[in-house]
Image (cartoon, rainbow, N blue to C red):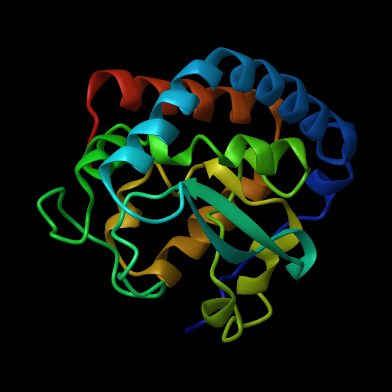
Length: 203
């Protein structure tokens, strides 16, 4: 894969928002979102436990800020005999998905536990896709720049058409996000995320 003509600018990463403001915004917003969604998260946990055997949460290692590994948490939507690194289901009719899993994947409610990753400073509300370690091992230096910021629950790549392509095809989108890192851009991405959630839930 050829290196793009421009490298990610480090100037955006030295701004007050990048160094302090982004985490402060993430922490405060996530704290209130956890309070708001707490009853729903408890209900989802109960339904998962009642509808299929296995743990409530699916936990997996991901590559975070400065290539530091952390454990990401989601509500479990697949049966426990599904291999951790198997191909991601592309339909709610996939037999590996639990009855409750179809609903929480369709609505993206399986992502809610990641709010605790945000509170801990391991993730951001907005940022590049959290990458699996075995994929990041093969990154070239320019691709590895996506780890100069915390991975996000949502982001420019997550909302782009390129998410339909291969994982590495989305890296330029992640770098574009970092190039234009600002509170205003994060705010617009969050608004777009809520719009997609309410207007057109797609699997």
